[in-house]
Image: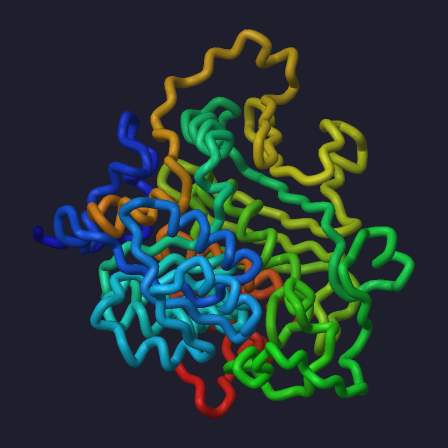
Length: 448
């Protein structure tokens, strides 16, 4: 089969062509031979990784050949269900034997995503990686380039992308139901991260911390703490980092709510509005902490025109921040949501519902005929892509720019000023202090 590469712009154009949908994008990926089983290795098999393992391994076309986890309890539990699979604690050792591996599923903590994904891409293996795709902008760009070169089936784990509701919203926006969209707002009620102890309790945060702990704890005997740290700077074990997702608020290991839930919620306007690299980013919130991501913050992105779509802004809110139109009670008071404001109306959506506003104006509105086919689910999509060369909904060519944009919201927040972004050069113009947040040097023994 002749192989072709798909650019992000081609992917987006393929996704909105009438009667086509995202599964009719113009490229075919490298696929397995006909009737061949897909031999899959799983890196991270507890928590979300255990969910990915169970769902993917349930497919009759999948054969589990290797399991890896730095948590020996997780590894033991998974191995009991797949006794024929090889087991590893260090994924670097897993990659020394690849002759019987066709695809890899990465479900580690965020700070090791790129390091577990890159060897698979370099070896020409298909990859499914949990969100967010990487820990920083530089890693995301490196993974995108490697995926393009490998031309394999890739998917970032944003399961909501495969839900019917998102598809119907994209169809409405792209068919002009509310006219040209010049601003969008995304808000999530989750308030995890740096905040007062009272706010942490009120918001249901899973752990409270306001600084790096000075106390040193002994890691659980089942956990290889050094391997868990991976490329991150060395620090003593403490239970404010582990188990997950406690780690996600610490800059060394995660990027807070912005890149975590942003992967799901910013996905909708990113898809519907054909967004890519923002021109500017400005963030708002309490003073940035060197160790901890904030529970509450906001980031505003400016985008230029895209095809026949006008320039627009996208504003993100988390924790206690909300759009002014929400505060003024001019829209339904959804706890989390995406609001598109067009010249002819508004559209409010969440994971499973959406409504055109004002409702009386759209009472007799005739919806467009669906042109984005429903998904069999993100896991099935990826398996089909591995076996048949069909496109996925969140390939790294799409998920990478989405991940970069989310990270840039945090970069603007941490430098404390508006960023003018040069996407091609991957630099914040006249803002050298941003460089340290775009890329970091991994710990000795780890590299991309």
